[in-house]
Every structure is written in structure tokens, then in C-alpha cells.
Image (cartoon, rainbow, N blue to C red; front, side, top):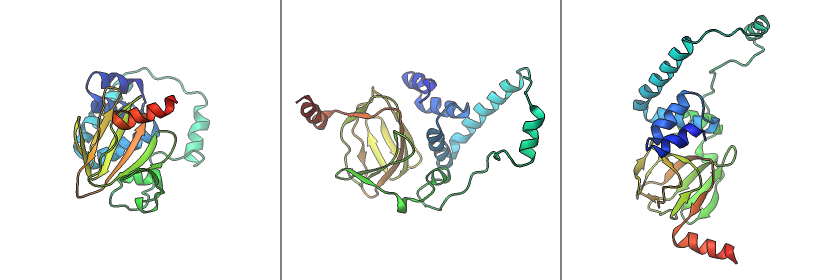
Length: 218
């Protein structure tokens, strides 16, 4: 996770910081997929990102040009098709829950996801790299009380959950850090699917966390 996100989380503007880091191109590929998926589900935030990208372009345009070594060879490679084309993203399989960027990232729909059991009502599918996963939580279930050792960014894909930070439904992003000690509770009526990118494992608190700590101490 980028230092700019950490700083803005501390300043109380975590979502703005995440969108700004995305606009500047300083987020990891999985986190970029999460933001792109959010913007597809919440297009009202696209104007903010577009404005940041335009501002960055103006600043870049004001910079003095830098000579590019071996310019002719590089240009010929692009025109001859030897270099990969930019911004050509395959659509990926159709899925009513997954936004297009996430479908493309996964390469398949939710119907073929391989889940592993974490606890009653909660399953996980680990994806590309540590800290990148899909979560499935049963409608009406309660997650363990926990906090975070780093930054965890969660995009809600379906259903909704509530915790001490508020209510989060489809398209919403919750950003948690070590100051957030919470127990997400999934609303009744619909299972909750989430896409999660974290830079450190969570830490269980509450009765379960104290019980695990006691076991590990022996």
C-alpha cells in the first residue's frame, strides 16, 4: 500500500487518498482493480478521479521534455506490433455481481471460485499475492471482532454490512487500519461478497482473539 494512503488515512480522508493514489498511478495492480471496480459501481466518483488525472496531465505538460534514448527503434517496435498494445483489456466472463475490471482480473465468474472455510458463515478465496482475496459472508452473520496490523481496503460486491464505521453496500469501500476495532455484521436477506486488498493480516480482538492469544502463549 502506498505511503500517501497511510498519511491520508491518518488525516481522516482515506477514500479521497485512495482515489488520488489511483489517479497518480501509485497503487498496486490489485488495488487498481479494486478502485476501477468501485468507479464502475459508483460512477459519481469518476469526476473526482478525472479531475485529478487532468491536473496531473497539466503538471506533466508544464515540465521540460526529456530526450528519449533510442527513440527511432522504440517507435518502430510499437508500429510493427512488437510491443504490447496499451489499454486493450479483455472483457472477461459475464457475471451479474462482478464488475468488469474484477471479472477480467479473475478470468472467471463467482460460479467457479474455489472457497475455503474460515468459520461458520464466512469463506475466503485467496487470489493474486498475499492479502488479495474474495470473501463470502452469509446473510445475517457476524464477523469476529478484529482490528488491523496495516491497511485493509474492502469493496462490497453484493449485500451489505454495518460496523462502527457505518453501513457499506454494493460499490462502497471501507478502509480499515490499526485504529479501527470493529465487528462487521452482514444484513439479512442477501449474502455479502467482498473484494479485499490488504498489506498486513488482521488481528482478532474480543473473546475469540483473547482465546487464540491464550492458546498461542502456551
